[in-house]
Length: 125
Image (cartoon, rainbow, N blue to C red; front, side, top):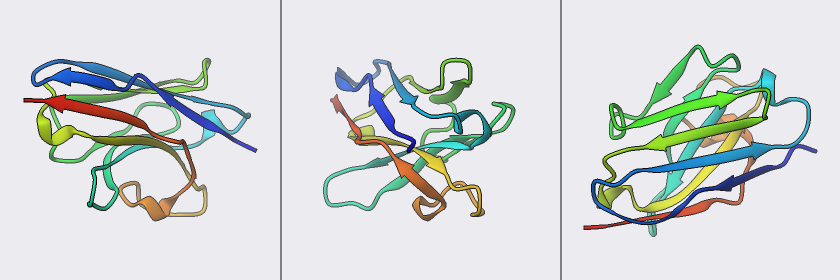
């Protein structure tokens, strides 16, 4: 059974940077698209970024494009989310997820079948 464990969240000020990590157990990591989602209080879970199995293809939500960078290291079974120029509206619980091999799309939670427990990111003004 694959497990995902996020780390790297915290409390920062607007304009600061954070790097989130998501470590995966199991042998399927290197063949699966990985994604980051976030959920703020009272809001639905929303897509942030995704990366194809080889790392050659990336996808971003418009709200984070140019500020966030997703990457992966298949040798370490880890996916990263580098977040720069953070804004208060980036405050949320951030989740990494592994996309199901039998679904299409990368920007909907329904396409992912394994989720981490989440890590809190709080950005103060």
